[in-house]
Length: 295
Image 1 (cartoon, rainbow, N blue to C red):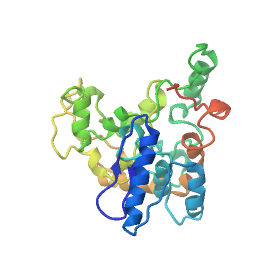
Image 2 (image 1 turned 90 degrees about the vertical axis):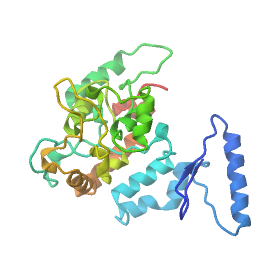
Image 3 (image 1 turned 30 degrees about the vertical axis):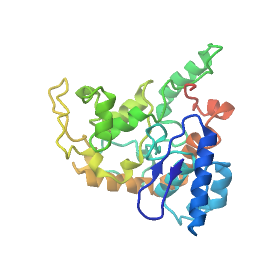
Image 4 (image 1 turned 60 degrees about the vertical axis):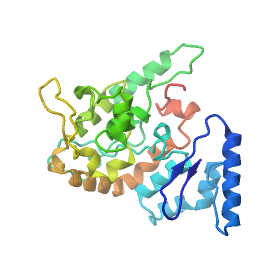
């Protein structure tokens, strides 16, 4: 049960493991207390989220550009039950660019952007063919066929991206048994991360919201000792594309501009179909090369 307030305090997540009745009872008690105080409370997820989204008219606002792409994606994540308070259901955002090598980025060039109609792991015909072959050759009667053996968002991926900022630093250290992960396994380069997600079969992660507004996650401002990699390089700030000119602020500004660009506005609905829409499962997911390992 995720509680959002119109004024402080910040959102609060109440966890009721495998107990929907307890969650409903807690909500009803909160509703009674709120009404007794003369206030209002709105229910978002307990009923059909698709219907709630339609009632909100957010999609209409987005289509007519009354809200930004970022705000609409945040809303979709919220209606899907994703929360900044829950690492297991953390908001997921897309890779939007494919150019992490040029000294200047041209947001008017379609070649600068990823293919939003395909999952990040299937951006090239070669990689897509590999995943489709895996799906077609799968023959385990107890596990449904899948293209991707991992997922686009997991708690480990969130902590991997956000290791340099609290409270994620503390959680990442806890995950690794009281220390940082090996230096060579830490998030150290935007370009290398994209390359890995688009050329290997065991890494297909998308992004988090912080990639579009928070430069601090790209810098080691707290001077954490992240170690030295096998090439003898200290792991410090995240290496940025040349077009960012070594500035995390520039990267975030340009990255956000890319998200709000005309090209992304015209194609982001294709990615939404993959993550939140009709191509999440079943025949549509199989056709779109978008089937993930069954959990």
